[in-house]
Amino acid sequence: MVVVVDPLYVSLFVDDPTPLAMLLVHDAAYFQFGTTEVIETPSAHAHLRHKKYSHLNGACVGVLDDMKPSWRTWTRGDPHVAWVYVVGELPQSELSSQGARTGLLDGQHSSVSPLAATRRISVRRSPDGTGRWVPAHVLRPFVPPGVPDNVAVQRVRDLIAKGQHHSRGKNNKRLLPEPIPPSGTSSGSTPPPAKRRATKIHTKEGLMYFVDRLGPLPHEIVRTEMRGPPGHTYKVLCMRPVEPTGATCEALGLSPADATSVAPEAFVQKNELVYMSERFGQLWFERAKDDRLLRASLCEAVSRFAASYAKHPISAEQAFRSLAKCSDATPTPDEFSVLNPETQSD
Image (cartoon, rainbow, N blue to C red):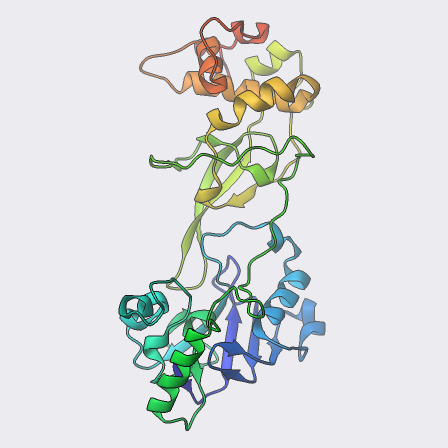
């Protein structure tokens, strides 16, 4: 998309405004990133410095596997981790899939910017206040210096016509982890896909949801934080398992220590949240009987759900039927007879 005459420095950002590492792309032509070298890392990962990869995605994966091995479990709202600080005229209207609006991309979305193929930009190794951060993959195609504009534009059109601009082509895969089964599930018990949501997802502290990759326990929102590189931040939710307290432990004959989860806090994206009613019934009737910790956490969730109706209180039995999506005629477990809002204590 651009003519770059400077060294192509690429910074990796992972949930922090400070770059995780810095890479140098030695050759980038049109839609392909070539040989990429790791040039800066924290001292604990000095062994990665000067290591070269055949392409940018390979370098990103290599660095993340070494420094952030858990990255393959992420589900991110923004798949970009590689960013370039650019200076120069680069209209927002020419970035990313804007080419589709002119028929250049035949109406298809792609993280490339053919309309800006002849723009001249400079790249900074670090931000100096004169430019902005742009995802590296969006900057494609890179036109080699010295190529006439008319030749460059025709070359870009030819490559697009051959389908060689796609981010997920055979030899040009986007940096995304392979899908993995949610933790805590086994063959035959994988939760069904969450339903498409037509209503707003609320992220107020204390609200409870399931997050499939965190296992079967319901989780509550502890706080929200902003992550990502400057100018491109996004919200993440800090969540922890719902742990039984007060009357819940008493009803189940458990001490708080016996019902406490060892799972740490986890950060998730809003699009990972699954409504309680979409998983509760399956987990209660299929797994909770043989999993004491899960049963205790689900009971606590029922108690909190009932107590959340402050203006018009409902019983724990009503809350259970609502979450489990069962009829009023369905018998409720005995422990819920004592788990009512007026009797619950911290």
